[in-house]
Length: 173
Image 1 (cartoon, rainbow, N blue to C red):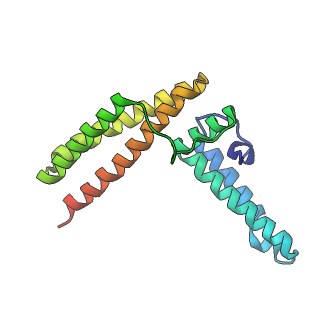
Image 2 (cartoon, rainbow, N blue to C red):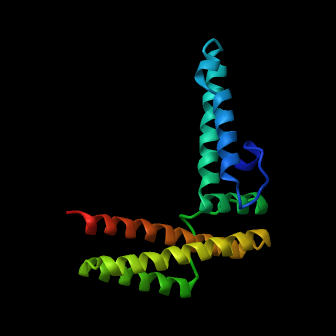
């Protein structure tokens, strides 16, 4: 299993200093640049390309709070969550999802931009709250609760993207 924290020489922590991450990313990519391997063997060039791809993958994991939390959980419990096979038993949140979807559909049907902005603010606030709760659960090593919160964040992230698409439609002239 790829440990993105180890690759960037960072502590396994949900709160990652993005400036340090960017600096270390640039340094790693500089050492792996193809020009550095122009006169190397084909095998060395291939290894450098693979390592560069790993660095890019690790960067994406560490930049995204949901992926970062998935990685922390997997590193601590020794298993990756299979999102395809999992089913949710979080009935209260399922009901909340339905309510939000209905609300968004109503806003889209009425093309009410002001309501969309109010709804967007509400969802962004919910997103920030869940990130805070997730950070706390990870700090407390409450892996089960962290997974539940991360699943909720996955849904909220998709909802934010949908809100942005509707906003684009409503602001087109």
